Image (tube, rainbow, N blue to C red; front, side):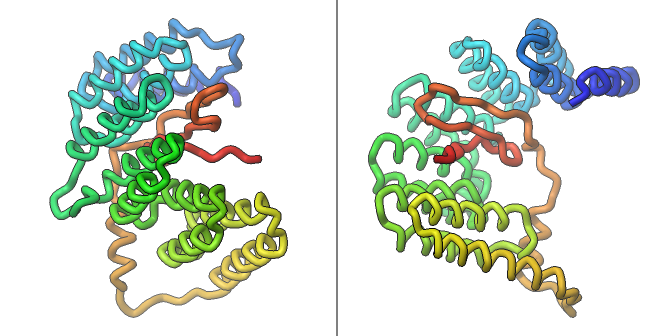
Length: 299
């Protein structure tokens, strides 16, 4: 991208609003994404520090700051930033999840489990039941990825199940669980997970497209090319049908009401991308609407 033009835009915005921590955070992230030989690490760190001086209680800034510090190789400093993030906003699930993922990569499974559990307790919502509510879904998902790595597939299933109980539309939990079952050879179970989840999404949503694609890729990897083609064709038929239908319902359904509740503005915004070359995860860790999730690598 044109980084210099973006820099000019950020500087212009800051002349009118110097105390906007999210603008400073976005500016820092932009600078960190320059080509490696053009990144000025000192400038990136200074922008993050400015953001924290403006709003020392913005957990999202701690999260993004920590991810960048990990790239610099200072794991202890990143851990400290994430811990401070949980202290200033104990209900900010992405910070807890980032901390848990960091411990998964650079510490023991026991330590990571403890972080995920502490995060779930802190983020649990009234009426959320045993799963803790939608806010906790990302924590259960990441915990499930950890247990899958550790070879405790029964525990992974429990975590993924809790994630989907908390948020039945959590794409990361759906794909991680289904692909784990496929890797274990349980294709019938994997297909059941995909099929059960697809009905919860509106036809043209990006999330549903992602689920269809993961389903198709699973079949391709297994050499089930005919099934993969069938999945692809089903997704295309649904997409074309939805575009042809322009139906205005007479009254909002329960699903419509739930959909609208999910569209409320969230403080947990997308902040960064975390490459994991040579890491224990053997994959990319990515941000999905503020959620740090293990992304299964293409084979």
